Length: 287
Image (cartoon, rainbow, N blue to C red; front, side, top):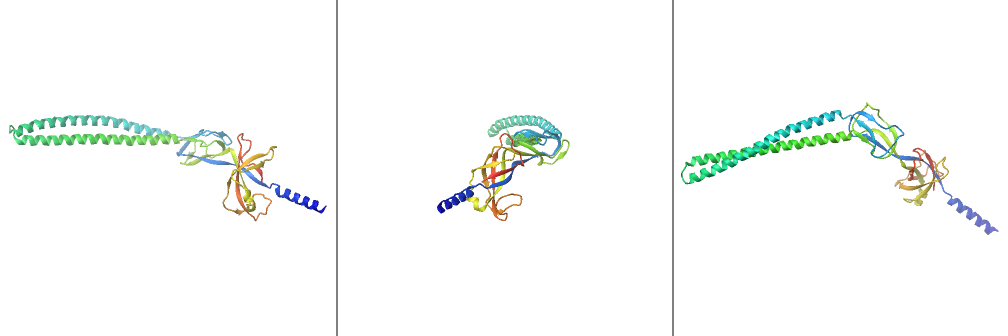
């Protein structure tokens, strides 16, 4: 009889040890503050708080009138430069013809001078003319290269303007819910200032705190059970992160252990494809 009693006590003790511990946390979606890459006046804000957006959706538009004027100025400068390039190309062709003629004439005079049919001074004068024609051709070529380099600079300016015009369209980098909207149409915004804050809700996470003595039971990718008030069926989560440092139990969490104990923060990911779960929902995690 005494042996049966001891067996019953041991069985009850094992059941108590195997009873899962419940930890309370709050579901949170990962947030992203979406900035306006270009500063200026907001022409339009297309989303409201609570709206769902997909990656690539337009959130807001910044005024680009000044950029359009700058683009027209650069295009006009390129048109003027194109005319100058045509003039320089014509001058280069003319100096090339002059150089060929001077070289041909100098060759004939040189032959006559060697036969002493003409004074040597005539040959020296023509050689000087050839040098002048060669210098003129080189100068005309350099002038054309200079104009071509200026055109490249204008092209770079135009590319920068086009990039700024593209940056004037604020797009959603991720899909999610608009948690906060910071500006209204007509307001001025600085470069890199956030227009809205988005929350990813297709996958939420909850942070709980595990006592040090139970840390050995935690594994990356481990499946855990979760319960949410108002939902009859339990949920399944997956351990995605474990803190490398211990800390004192925060006052805002609930654990059965003493609050003076050292704990480790653990993050559990919860899939939410249908958007049933909401950011800020309290949840219980069984371990």
